[in-house]
Image (tube, rainbow, N blue to C red; front, side, top):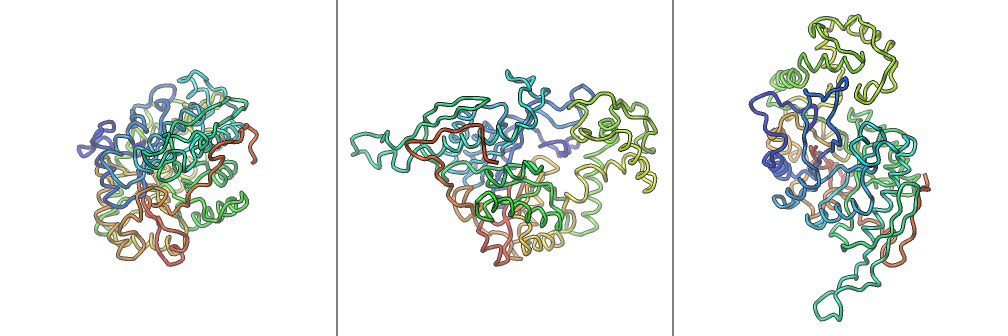
Length: 475
C-alpha cells in the first residue's frame, strides 16, 4: 500500500480498513506466500512543502495490524517495518517478541534507519542522528534486540506443574548496553519463540547497508530484479556474508517487484498500459518533474515537451523528493529534455518510463510466459523470492495466486505446501545463534565491528541446486 497503488478506480478498496488487509493476507497465504510485509511511514509525504495529496497515505501501525492478522491466518509470516532511530531497543524487541509468540513464530522485523530532521520533528529526539552514524547506531540497536530475544535459556520455564518453581531464574540473563545514544539494563519478560527470534529483513543498498545486511540480516530486499543485475547482487551479498563469517547462503535475497498478468501477451500489454495510466496520470507526471525542478510547474501541459524552465537549485530539503537529493538539478533537467526530445516523448510518456515502476521492476506478460521467466531465475539461483507490490488493493494478488502460482508449481519451481509452521522454516533459515543466551549476557556498546509476494524457495540451498524456486512475501 504505497504510491504505486491505483486508488482512483471503482475496484480500489480502503487503504485503512482491516478487511482490505485481511483479504490480501489470506489470499497470499492461500498462494503459499512466505510472508506478508507492511511498510512504515512516520510522517505524511510532502511535495513542495505541502502534504502530497496524490499519494496513498494513512496506513495503520504495522505491529497492531499484524497482530490482528495473526488471528485470521495460520502459516504466513508477518513482517513489520520498524525504525531504529525513533524506537528504544528493549521496548521494540519486547513488542516484536510478543508478535512472534502470539503468531506462533511467524514474526519478522524489517530494519530501517532514518536520520533527517523532517521526520524527527514528529518525535521527541528530533533529527539528532548524523547520517554517517545511522548504521553504527542501528547495528548496536539490533545486537541489543538479539540479546533480549536470546536471554532466556531453553530450560528457563519448568517442563510441568510438578516443579518447585515455574521459572528457573538462573536461565535468564540480563541485557546491558551502554552507548552514545542510549543505555539499557534490561531483563526480558518473555521466553524464546518457536522460531527462536523474529526473522530480520533489511533493505539498504549502499555499500554500508550491504555490509550491515551481511552481518545482521536474514533477508535483504533489493532493487535488483533484472536477471543480470540480480545475479551480480547475489554475488556481492554472498561475498560480503562470507567475509562477515557467516555461511554463504545465510542471507536470502528478495527484489521488490510488480506483476501485471493476463491470459495472453496482448491482453497483458493492454493491461499494463491501463495500470500505468492510472499510476501516473497527468497530475502525477507534473508532480514528479516538480521534485527535480524544485518549483511549481503550473500551466505546463503533461502531453507537451519537458519544460524549458531553469530548475531551482538554491534550496534543497527532504520534501523536494528523495530522487533529487544529491542530484545536479541544472545538468539533470537539461539531460532529461534532450533524452525526451530524442525519443519523441511528452511529459507523460517520459515519466512513465522513467519512474521506478518501469519495466525493469515489473514482470508483465501471460501467465505462462512470466512463469518461464521466473523458472530461469530459480534455475540460476538469482534470488530467493520476490517482494511483490500489488498495484490494486485488495484484489492485486488474485491473478498471481489463481493463475501464476499453478504455472510455477507445474514447472516444479514453487512449493505445493508449507514446509513448517514458522517463517524461519518457510525461508529455509537455520535456528538463530544464541547471542548471549542465558545468564551472563555480555555488555553491548556502540563500537560495532564493521508480499507483497516472493516467488521463492523456503527450502535450503540444496533445493536451488535441485532446480526448485524461491517462495512468497508481500508488501
